[in-house]
Length: 253
Image (cartoon, rainbow, N blue to C red; front, side, top):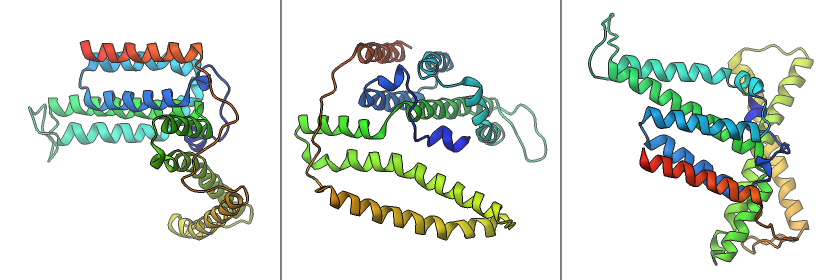
């Protein structure tokens, strides 16, 4: 479930999936930047509330989302405890070599919230963005700006977004096939037994991809040609206004 949350190959049809991919990419980069630099708890509350309509517009099941984030709860707890016990400042109480501080309490909550918001935004972006549409839009923008040296970047971005899920699903397929044959190994040996087949399968798929690109006449650095040009939709305008509103709130707070 965790793998499908971050590496889903099928994009769900929703209002947010029809928004310009470049606009969503700009949103997640700016949103992540704001999350990292701000230390205002009030604004963190605003950022959290601002994600709620995006979750509904992306048609993500909230129960499944929260259940899929269970492995990250340990990370949130570990982040909080490390800051709580090892951040210097005014000591709350002392137990053995642990000296939790008020500053550590604040930083623990702060960084845990940061991680949570960053993960949620990454999930929303992944489940609502088609890698190849994003690649096409970036290529068209680079061509418009006469940045032909960057033509390879959108293609590599699209391949990476599609190739990583393939590796994860290939690993899961190998695990299931080993379980079906009754193989029971320790954790370390299980990783070793999966490592070589996954590497071999990945190289084989990359080789097939290179043949497919050559067969289709792909020339590195030549840029893209498009069957149609994407028009600006009403949803793009509303999403842009939504983004401007977040920036405005960040400035005044």
